[in-house]
Structures are given as C-alpha cells and as structure tokens.
Length: 123
Image 1: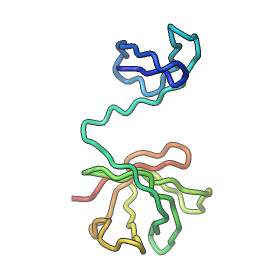
Image 2 (image 1 turned 180 degrees about the vertical axis):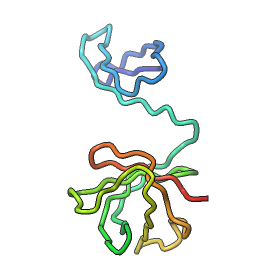
Image 3 (image 1 turned 60 degrees about the horizontal axis):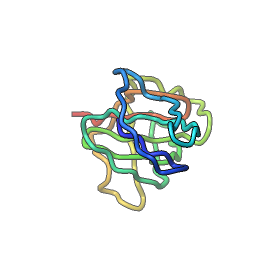
C-alpha cells in the first residue's frame, strides 16, 4: 500500500495482510495517526450520490446511492426499516433522475453493514 500523510504529505510504502479492510497508520515523519479504509475490489467503482427508490416486495423506501461498479451498487439507508434487508434478498431500484441507471432484472443483497448495503446485479 502507498500511504500519503494528509498532514505533512510524506509518503511511505508498506505491506498489509490480506483480509484487512481498516488500518490505523502512524506517519513516521510527523507522528500523526490516520485511520484508513482499504478498497480491495478487483474492478473499479464510481462514486455516485443521489436519492433512489428501493422496492422490497410491496414496500418502497428512499435510500442514498453511494457507488456503482460493473457488477453491483452500494446504497445507504437513512433509517431503520420495518422490512428486514438481509443477505440474499431480491430487491428493485428505481431512479427518477436517470431511469436507465439500474438493471430491470433487479439486484440481490450481498452484504449489510449497519446502514450500508452492497447489491449485486441479477444475471
């Protein structure tokens, strides 16, 4: 990993074990600690933002779009829903500002971490 200190701009290269997603890094030059979140995805993703509609069964909720990749989407729920969003559940997404943004086949929930949800496109 290449690390650039946000405080003093010094650079450092070091190795991180597989499976580590979060790491606290201490700058060797200025001593400031920085908390890093590592993205180990094989394919690139594009940061997106905006409100979209999430449809689960007959219920519809407004959620925030976080990012889009070739195979999936990241969203964030702004509230605790009555409907349980669980891994493996099928959902639909609709976007008022770009109706062609999402697949008509729908998505499957791949991960749930707090309010953040990772979705994979159905094939």
